[in-house]
Image (cartoon, rainbow, N blue to C red; front, side):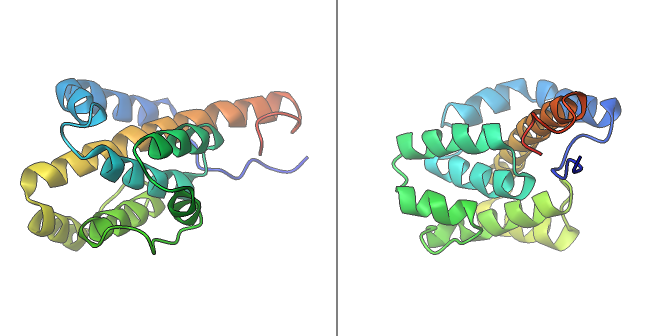
Length: 161
């Protein structure tokens, strides 16, 4: 049996850390997800960039549809899921690249990256970007953790390892 290679939660404490972070900011989460804290297409670009890194099959499916619903072209979505950002609006590129680096670093931002994000987008939008990233990270790692469990109990037949 092959091993499960996708990013997952390393333990219950990490899961509850994300959950508590999001619950403590519930009003902001609702605002962001309703398209009021961030432009909805911008939010979907950020979420696709993080989802590509974490490779959550459930989130890829969901956010591909959400991105289409927000007016993103199929080609742009395909490129985002390949880590290519040719069609990304220039005004969003810095945040998308920040999201990708953040996801590769396991949900951690370099101080200089964070400083640049705030400088480019302002403190409120930068905070909304970070909350959006935490939302998708929680979704990605939850989906992948469930898939890892399915993979393990089915001896590799389920869970899309």
